[in-house]
Every structure is written in structure tokens, then in C-alpha cells.
Image (cartoon, rainbow, N blue to C red; front, top):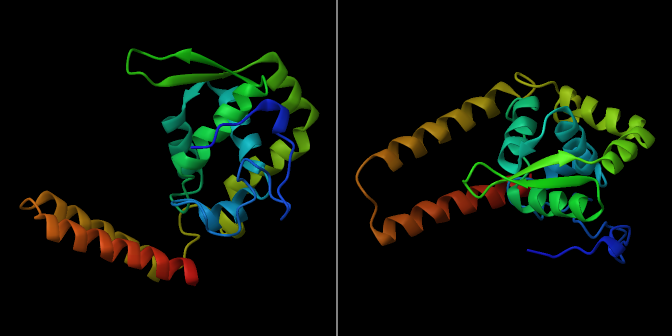
Length: 191
């Protein structure tokens, strides 16, 4: 996991990407990648996380679920993108962190600086939240996906649940199971 320094939060790499990895578009983050680029664009996840936390302080996992729910399950940002972004926002002084309920989870709250940043960027924050209401590529949450894709996803989830709830896998079966899922993910990224 990268460590972010607040003095570098505005830096860009040679390709014009934010150092926080939020420019997307290259499918580089598992579970997020290309869908995240279309949903949030360059750095938009910052605004979404800040707005969600401003509405209600939350743990990282709750934020991931909230985004997934708002997008009707069509996209969920990966923890590998969300947690570094939360750390960056904390280092920028926009979030404060409280030790959680004994579970070791951090609970994030928006600071006064975070509220000011949201107010100063209200148009962008509202646009990012509106994108979530519209789903990926404006295709509306729930039902925005083509039905054949929804059916295939549900079939895959069912097959995985049935296999994983059955007899314990051997080491070889576990490797084969993972290989099938990895191959499917790679094929999907090429579409």
C-alpha cells in the first residue's frame, strides 16, 4: 500500500494521473478499475467519500457498501482504492479518525476543513453524487445492466456459493477455482 504525504496530494505523474491512483481508465485496481473511471473520473472518489462521511460518519467497509448499493451492485470500489483515499483525505485535514468499537476499525468523520472543501467544491461533489444515482455510464441503478449480464453474474454467484459451501477443496482444486475466476476477470477487462 502506498503512503501518501499531504505535501504531494496535488502532484501528477508523467501521464497526468493523480498520485492517489484515482484517474482510473486502465483497469489497474481489482474490483474497481474501468468501472470506477467511468463512475468517478479523475479524483472524483474523494468527493463521494467526503460527502458520504459528511452525511454520516462511517467505517471504510460501510462506505464501500454504500457506494455499491447506490450503484445497484454494478460497481464497488476496491479497498485498495478506498482506504488509501481515506488516508489521503485524513492527511489533507478533511477527515478525522476515531478508534472504533473495539473491532480495530476506524470510523471517519468530516472535519471543519473537510466541510469547507466540500462547500467550495459543491458543484463537483454534487456531480459525483449524481453520477452514483445514475449508475455506471448513466445506465441507472438496478436494471441498468443488460439482462444477460445480470443473469450471468447471478449464475456465477450461485455456482461459487454452492461449490464453496460443499466439501472442502484440495489445494489443487483451490488453485483451479482461483485460476478460473482470474481468467474470467482478465477476459472481462479486455471487453
